[in-house]
Length: 310
Ligand code: XMP
Image 1 (cartoon, rainbow, N blue to C red):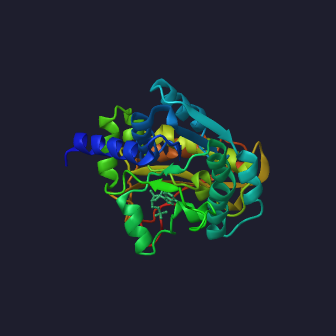
Image 2: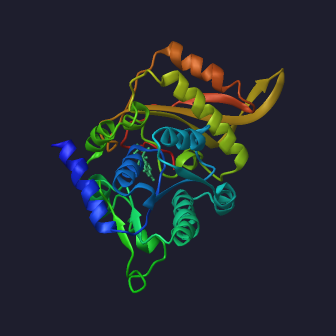
């Protein structure tokens, strides 16, 4: 594959399609949306409006870091604080599919549709890749028709157009393009992170306190396993609790699961055989967090487990 030619073709295509119009895209910091952002800006300059939506579910400092990374590339990204809306939408929701639906609905039907109106954009750029399309067709992934998720009906949709410049690539191709566009390794080789973000890593209802806990545990796992070479590693906060002892007193505390897997394409995964010293070090640090008195390591491959917990 000639990636330079691919990049030039996509830029040309975006220019031709958008003409003098305005395009919009949402950046999550993942490699797909990052590549779309750079392609869009190379094609359209300031006629593409890029937003990072803070949904309260991101990792520590993630929103500010991503905005800064793009600012350093001279690409302005507007940070949208939608934390309260997402927390409200997730209140009391425990069913995994309903949780995912609440996040999708809040993003598209509330936040993003508002941004589309505000910018008067008629062109929506999206980081759909070939695997997303295949999995949607196969019924593995929920459909990702952006216009219908935005509540834009076909009859009203005249003038709206979705651009998916990466729809012929798989993840490895997107990573190649990212590197060639000058994105740093922290983006081009970024570890997969799910759309529902930390909400995929809390079983049961989601609260700000639980998010804060899983966020802290995530930071520890990511620091400790940064050089593990594993495909994905993270912390999960369980709904269940367990008895422990802290400062000589019994404590009914939280349980954190550490997950670290190897995979090629996330369709299947094997667990990694981490050294005991490393596991003990992670457990020690995690159980120092307030009200967490147990840390367990997940030994389940995919299948039968999925990678995420929600
Ligand atoms: P599962 O949990 O299905 O995850 O084994 C497979 C891979 O996909 C990631 N994942 C998602 N990525 N939106 C995404 O963009 C999502 O809703 C989502 N759910 C899971 C997961 O982190 C793993 O790499």
